[in-house]
Length: 326
Ligand code: SAM
Image (cartoon, rainbow, N blue to C red; front, side, top):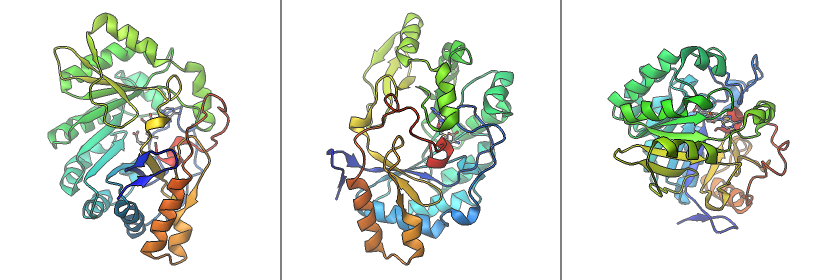
């Protein structure tokens, strides 16, 4: 069974946001001082999450990435992971986190069924990290990364949003750091999502320039690990290091998009960069049975837009990234 959208794309990947809250305030994601979060009663409870993910799994979704907001601020996350792990059809569970709280949770998450982890890290300099994240402590993140590695989460991928004049002088340092620790590295272009994402557009860096710059110092072998995701990868010759370039602006990857996003409040977004939305919470709380949920999942996939329009209509997406689940 496969979920095929009207552009022939097979949807097998669900990004699941478990909270819109975050313990950091990265300038391109959430405005400083932002407090207008959803109330926890508005979030799907674990049983509701399980039912929606179960419906998608019966229709062919097999990969789930838990995200947020910051997923580690949601209490009892390992329990949810263990429940999702039991769902027939789900064979890949991963986590996106800022890693501030990962040292405490890595082992329990691994035992519950998380296989791999993506960690956002935009700077290796403590003061700069604190400035970009609105007060974050780099030492906690580094502790989280080492705990992830020790717990056997593999691969550990670092996501770095590259910003002109803010951290673009660190791309080589980040490569060295990943070479040293055996992490995978991905660079990301800023996206005009929410006011904060749009404001970060003035620091936008076309990742083609980063790639050219790295090629001066490293021998980059193209074409490894296509994997169906948005990143285009190269490998650093003489090492196992993979470097991915996620280029939603300079070279969009919508033609191969294989995913949908379920927000913490049960709204399903078939596209990160469009306003289409399907309210699964309303369905659940109106007494929908499993067949109804499957019908809704099919209907949502049938209307998945062809592509985002970040370049043509940069003002379109008003919700913050932390709402949809990055
Ligand atoms: N808190 C988790 C984390 O830090 O990975 C998961 C959610 S976070 C919103 C997911 C990713 O979205 C992070 O890598 C973050 O850097 C990225 N992100 C947020 N806003 C963005 C924007 N406007 N442009 C590009 N990436 C963005």
